[in-house]
Image (cartoon, rainbow, N blue to C red; front, side, top):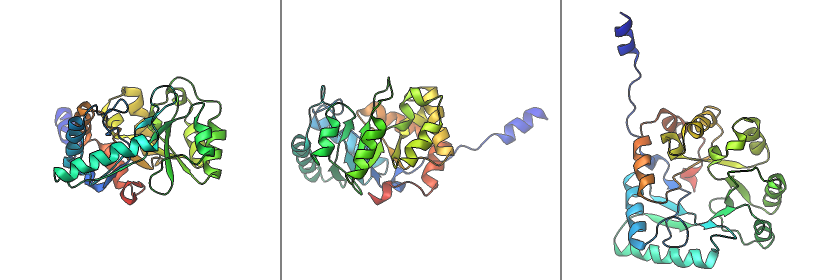
Length: 248
């Protein structure tokens, strides 16, 4: 009897989620040759086609801008964007491609805010990331500066910062400060390990996620995305009605 109960109480596997429900992805690395994402036009096209097959109709790609590693700016990014838009037209791929950036909170970031240089998407949203090793001391002041300069800060892959794992109130503080929280879908598929997956699930359970991103760099990300489509927490967050992706 116990065995039968286990069999019949087993949760049904959910159907694969159509990411077309999101319409837009707002975090990826698809401009070829300018960061650690797609290296060539061909590789970028393969990624765009794969994302379209998953349901996306709009891709806002976000190359890294990091002072000591990826010295990108709006001119470099927009030049690459136009190249890829031309390729999509040539190949008749029906995807709307736009670009912003993923800024690293480093010693030059505040001067970019002051100079109104930030590449944005949506309602003046700015995607930024911070160190994975140590919480930056200036985080609060930089968020305040972004907000008072008319930007809405979006913290990239919020579930990936290990120094907050033992301090869940930090996520509430970010929300109170006016930061939107972005989750990488592949975190739910275990791409960054079990602890990151656990935190991602908790943030979804607490209804704290505002945006989902693929953070797509290469085809390995696509494979993990495909394997995550039946994940209950992915279904939960997309069905929550809170996500902002579709309005981008």
